[in-house]
Length: 580
Image (cartoon, rainbow, N blue to C red; front, side, top):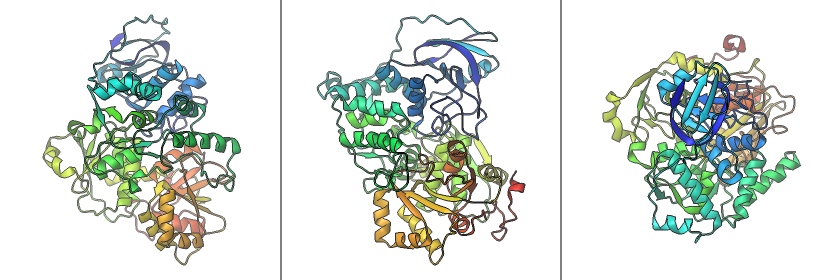
């Protein structure tokens, strides 16, 4: 059977076909050294994508998926090709960078929904450009025509000047990558952005460092105010935390490379907490999924969900694709999610809801209705955004009567497809995120994304006059600037007296042993994002609950949370036996 689709990256391949109806985040979901799927919540968990034609409806989750894609390519354990049902940018950008900078790429094709469904009934696939052949037997390797993948991008005088090399070799190569990315998106022009946030500073392996050093060797200098995401180590305390010296050296080299290009040492996955946070209507070039979603949805700034690497290119040129959430039509909701009566709630509902809404929305921008009577704090919307970014590929959401642009969209509500979200699904998701097999808690993990000043205030109130159990590690990650602000407010002393450890620069998505105690079994967190990723990334069971429940677990050394809708005095009764 033969199908024709949209060719995103031209190439030829023939291999076993591996189809899955669920999107996959390569960051936290795929081992870059082996190609094995490690996301415990994904249907492909335990299988290898190496050397197979991988067919997914879309990507999802972290912007760092592009760096994992490049690591897989350079490690020789990437898929033989990628087929998507919806245009995908994060993984495709990783392939584009591999092609431009390392002469290493695989074909990437988008098929229509009907054709995508059809190919999933077959066992083998062969790709040549835009053509996809499927069969129940291995197909011969196809021949690839010499036709190029073309796009028509309108160039400004600035673009022509950069491409002519007048801004240096680094800016020229960066703009070439941006133009290739714009063609993939179907953009017709580029636009100016006012600031950048770089997620590519996370050390995923040798490829992430090679990319940065390649640009550094060209004399790269950022032209925009540029902040850096959290990195893989606490630069100032890595020895105290017993981090492996080799990892510390490589991760620090990567961060310092971007600092040498002119980035600020912000080292936070929550740049919206900085004084430099963008304003409504401001075009920016941000990476890091939770930050992008918060910026678009809560701040009303305008950015695409830029994959790692393109963030660096934007910072080097000040230019980005005029597409996606930069445009009014790219910010409109395409789905309505109606939430049923929640009853009494605590702060764990917001990450739960974000996680579920993201799964339901996938690539669609949702308008969430039914939360109008709530008055969420910024920390609640932060938790919702991070969880949404974990399960969705969309770059934003709207919540009726809460997010800034939702009021302009109420007339669309009746015309949108509707999905009803009932209490039963919330309860089911709570059980799935609580993956631990017993009630024990060895570590309480807070700050994914980085703790804000508001969260430190809430935690200090809960900790005052209490002491954590000596048997439990209680660790919080945050930015340097938030730590300093919290220290001035008196929160840090209260939390230190409780017995907690506070780490800056890095975040839980990059932390392993010995920060996570050797021999520990279970982690307690209030982050749905970390509850999703931790079982695959650090091989621990997870308890998920509210901030107050995290403090209680830190004091008791045992999980004391309750499922949504249950009375708060039901503690040990919500046992793992009922969960499983």
